[in-house]
Image (cartoon, rainbow, N blue to C red; front, side, top):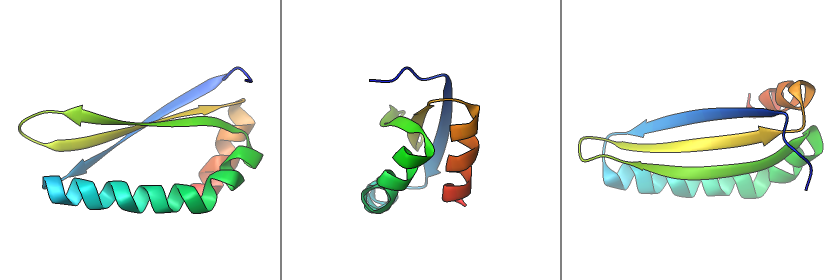
Length: 79
């Protein structure tokens, strides 16, 4: 597996547990449809993490890229 040269971390906050569940399903649908584009642009891997806290519902998305150019190309796909 190629070594990542750049890593980004994004978080999403949700009001309720059910909102978080819907958000997870939506994100999975997006990734199923677009991950090949991200890979071609230079994304190596994406990891989703739940951040557990009793007061809020949060998910973290860790992205690994081949290099800075890959990061910039993937930002265009996000938009």
